[in-house]
Image (cartoon, rainbow, N blue to C red; front, side, top):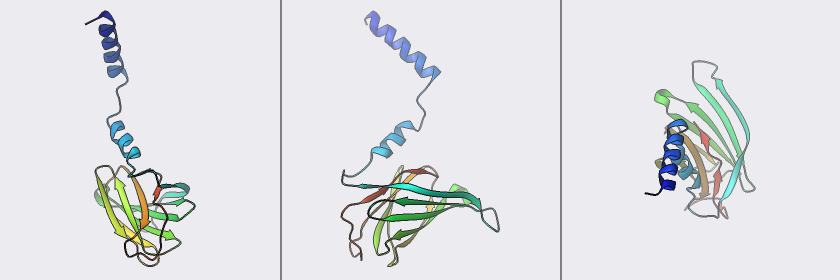
Length: 153
């Protein structure tokens, strides 16, 4: 090994011990880059309310609204037992569409009802995002998939 390689190796060990890479950084970067194709439209957070305590009990909820040119997505997030969350969502304009929950390590697809409403239960903590697209037998056709900004539960 050359002297340069030994020096650089020492510098690397110093940085790794003094300021190591956060354990979830690689997973978060892969999650952020994991888009099936470049034809998505990004729905940005335009409003966020919460967390708030429910009127009765200790349930915590927050509401997040995402907007894009094509659609508005509103979700109420309820933190449940065991750290799992529930999404109660509404799409505007309403209609039967496909919603995909993307979380590190898994994906789940559901179809909204005719009014654009959906429920997803048992969502583990971590970074998640939604992707909304036309459903096979849907009542609304989107020209491209709408993907929300990622949020952390």
